Image (cartoon, rainbow, N blue to C red):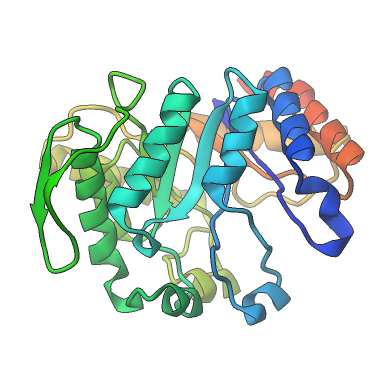
Length: 307
């Protein structure tokens, strides 16, 4: 099991200490020191005030924030979890991603999703109803852009007659792309076009917010994994599908509690037995010193003890 830790780049008035180059560097170094495999950031370039007031969080540009983390570390992978791909032109996104991958020595993991915020789609000038089609097309365009070949591509959305993207991905196998989502169209997209898939626990009000399928039991998770495998066989997928998700159905305990650590170890171990390779981790961050302590605790008392 590999773990990717949330980089809490909040910059609300009460947590301004997390949003500086020094702070991001300090957090990233601590993650690498205790054995995390990656750090991840979220993506909300133009959120609504209503979303922020309802519990949403301000964010930095994901590629800027991850660039700072890259300069402070040497092994830590840099994950977008997730970039809302339809918000951006695929050629521009391909350039940002491959630039960071090149400069970091091949540490980029591109997590992508369709997003769910209608106001944010309106703000960036993209039709919300077309998000799935745009996502699929963008993934195909980006893979062509990273091939090193001259790209000729024409559709109602994108046109390229003689386009070249440099640098090339740092790794021979390319840049890992993981697609998020619980619905069958999202799973099919991940299987057909991506290296990995990122389901996420969702029930109750979160279903209405994220506009996805429910995932609240291990039985539902197993059904989704089985569907991904069956679809992979149907389309002739050759390589294994990386699966990344957090734990499901556990209480939000307090870092430092032995019982809480045992619950997390059990949950991650169960995920691992189901074929889940990576886990996303969000830790409380009431202050910088407390957050660094929580990273240390998780690395020593949870991650190191997962079977």
